[in-house]
Amino acid sequence: MHIPGNNPPLCDICSEPVDFTEPKVKIQKQIIHKECFKCIICDEQLEIGCCAMDHGLCRYFGPMWFCQVHMGLGSGEKYALMKQRMQEMRQK
Picture 1 (spheres, helix red, strand yellow):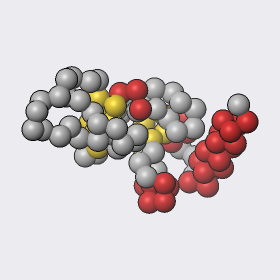
Picture 2 (tube, one colour):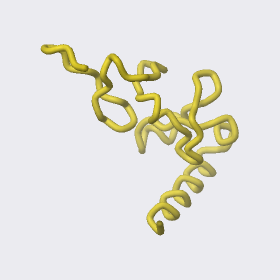
Picture 3 (spheres, one colour):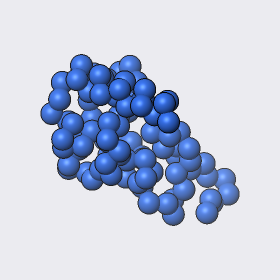
């Protein structure tokens, strides 16, 4: 549902509009569809307080969030796992 005259904000992950009636997450001045708020490496659904953003990687790739398992890794390790995951997705 969209109110005429108001443009809904765009999801900081998928860039699609986030309607005010949709489930969403507001974190660090970002609005994200609830279904988009997942670990970039393993697709685990995230919850505020149990995740982290890697600001070093975000400078190059945009906003990315990591679960508790992956948030403690260094940026290089995260990048290697992301690259591996993308290769696996292309093969499917």
